[in-house]
Length: 115
Image (cartoon, rainbow, N blue to C red):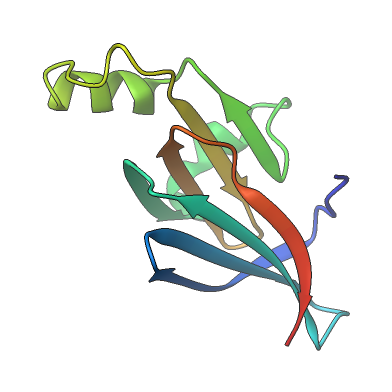
């Protein structure tokens, strides 16, 4: 799915074991991009100005996925490796005002919804 670069953070909540992130485009008043992470293992939200070094990376775009990152290394170290046998992914959602990092075992569900 091609995602626009001008999304901004709208809302985040947990419901029935899912972390739901809603992103909006300023020109789409009644629609949101909905990203649902099923049973996330870890997450963090940092304002965009707190991640300037990350934003300097030209390979960073709206929605990124990796299985090797410092956030995953930190998680493995903090959990004493109890998740080492599981294939974990680090998703990064970059918006105009926040960067949301999520560690999960499954791909998220991504869809456009009407408000």
